Length: 431
Image 1: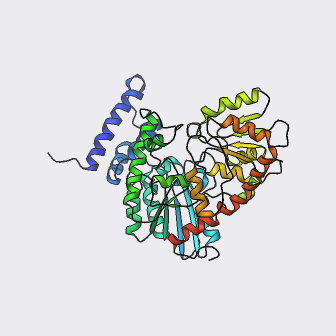
Image 2: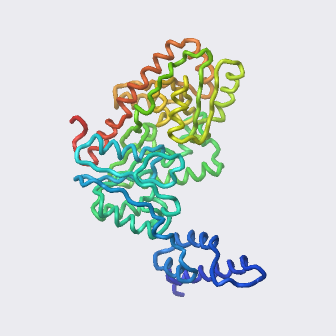
């Protein structure tokens, strides 16, 4: 028996969907000559998963299901520099754009562009691609041609496909295409993309991954193991955004998260209010340990010791205003690291409290010569830690005052640009 061609498979799919759609949606059993718009939207989802030949058959059989060309966002202009860097496609916490920006601002002869999809928190980015466009085959093909003809280097984030799922659900096929056409490729991971839940749960008592049967944990486990395997086989540079991730990909290099320190400068004095303001703004309640910390903070608030603000789903600009008005910023208490949110709290000169392990602190010290000015606490100790801070406010202010200097030394982009300079083949800043 011969295997049906992509076109034949598409024709069969289209015919079946068309029949079912007409039966389901024709009032009184009458057949419409055109498929309703809501069904065409479903068909677009089918089309995105077909090869080009199958997509053409589906278009002819059902009417055009591709997105109109004018729905594709414009592509940014890339400066004519010897090195042209594409950072894509995740931009988690705005970091893809931050790495792109620090490369062009601190390295000579480097132009850069950041790209992402699904920008619900309104992070800065050069090319924002809506999710339906990212999955549209016409956009994928045109993005591929643009990227291959424009960039000399690509920093691929989170093992995600740069061109949409044109070559599969991971970046492996995209990397092969980029490399084949002479683009130098490096990979950079953000966190959950390579943090293997079972390994984390074995090491941390309050790990959010302690239930191996949990559906989200199961998905993250499979994805992280797959991504770690891809990175282990990849023969180019591999970077990670936080030092803890070196536990999962030891051959990687730490490329610090980048923020704009000036955006976070606050004029609100720290811990001078009789009842201080404590804020917790989790990007993911589960990964921050919010369910363990919130009840403790509510108790302290009920006792009149603090004002507690736990808020969700803020834009980046809104988050900055909340941090600037705080006395104490609570970051995460279950993962054993510090990332963008903690750096932003330190840049604002707030007292930042989080669970940061000794190995992470030591790695930062080895790389920078500096101690991380974050007050240590876990879910078991956070209440007493806050009471100690309130009892010795001068000591707490001293710790908070070290935050802005630390951030400007480690997280303002210069160090990260230096880390990326070797991959880009240009001198490091001030070298």
